[in-house]
Image 1 (cartoon, rainbow, N blue to C red):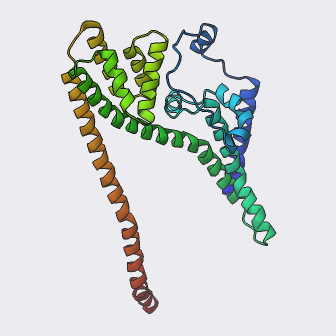
Image 2: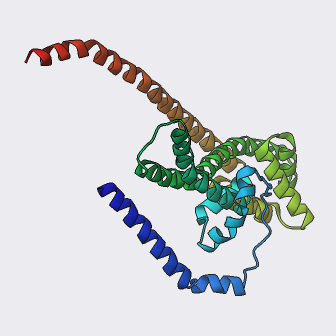
Image 3: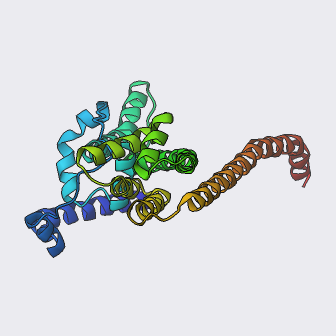
Length: 299
C-alpha cells in the first residue's frame, strides 16, 4: 500500500507540474533571445556532420523539436557530437525513442506473463518502466561521451606522429605551409583526414592554415592541436624556430599516451580479478553451507 501511494503521488505530482509548464512555459533567457535576433558571425565548422539515421532516430524524429526547446542537449554533449559527426536532432530522437521503449518494455513483459498464466503486482512493471525510461533517456548521452573520448584519444595519438613529420619537414628546409601539407599527405586514417580537410579549407578560403587548425582543435576539444597552431603561427608570421618545441610536444604526447595505456591495462587487470573473487566466494559458501546449516539445526 505504501508503494502504491508513493507511485500514485509521484505520478500525480509529475502530471500537475507538466500542466503548469504547459499553461505557463518559462521565459527564455535574454542571452538566448539576443542570440536568436542577432546571431554571431561564427565561421563554418571544419568537422563534417554525417546523417546517421537508424530506427530509433526515425521513430523519435517528431520529439526532437520539443526536446530542443527544453534546452537539450547540453553544451558538453554538443561538443561531443561534433567530434563523432552526429547531428543533434538524431541524438534527441534516439533519446525520445529509447525512453518510450524503456517505459513500455516492462508492460509488454507483464502482458506476456499474463498470457502465460503468471501475474505480477502492477506496481513492479510501473516502477521498472520508470527506471528503464530514465536509463533509455540517459544511454545515448553516455554512448556519445564514450565515443568522443575514444576519438579524441585516437586523434592525440595521430597528432604526435604528425608533429614528428612536420618537424622533419622543417628540418629538411621546407616552409611552414609545405611542411604542414606534405606531412598530412603521408598519414592515413580518421585524424589525418580531418587535418587534411582543415588545410584544404584554408587553401580554398585563402586563409592561414594555423587558423583552421586552431578551429579544428577547438571543435575537437584537443588543446594540443591548438598549441600546435599557435607554434606554427609564430613560425609563419615571425619566422620563429619551432622544431625544438614541436619535438618536445610530440615527446610529451607520447609519454601521456603511454601512461594512459598503462592505466587502462591496470584497470582491466583489476576488473579481471572480480569474476575470480565471485567464484571463490560462491565456492566457499557452497562448502560452508552444510556445516552452518547443521550447526543451526542442532541449536
